[in-house]
Amino acid sequence: MIYFPALKTVHTGDLMAGATPLIDYPGGGSVVEWTKTLDRVLTLDFDTVIPGHGAVTNKAGLVTYRNNVEKLRNRAAGLIHEGKSQDEVGKVMTAEFGWAANSLNMQWSLPGMMAELK
Image (tube, rainbow, N blue to C red):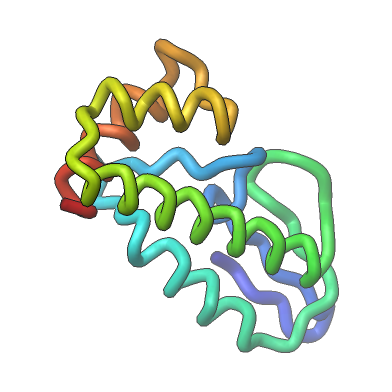
């Protein structure tokens, strides 16, 4: 994340990218730490958000994105705690969060969440 205080702008890089995060577990990513990091970003004084992918937005847009990440994490955690298999959790991620069947989300994020959120 890069903060430009004089411009009241943050560039989030891939902390905000598209509609749902690609959690790079092989690179050390964490769905739990994701929202914590976004919470720290939200303490800054800014109006404009330049995401890693997608349209330029504002602080409210970043709040919405952050809340969607939390919703995804909580949904996955609930399913995992219910004893759902990786395949079952993957089907929910596809249906509710738009993950494509052979996407990096399924290859990286899903197995990582299964381990992190157990």
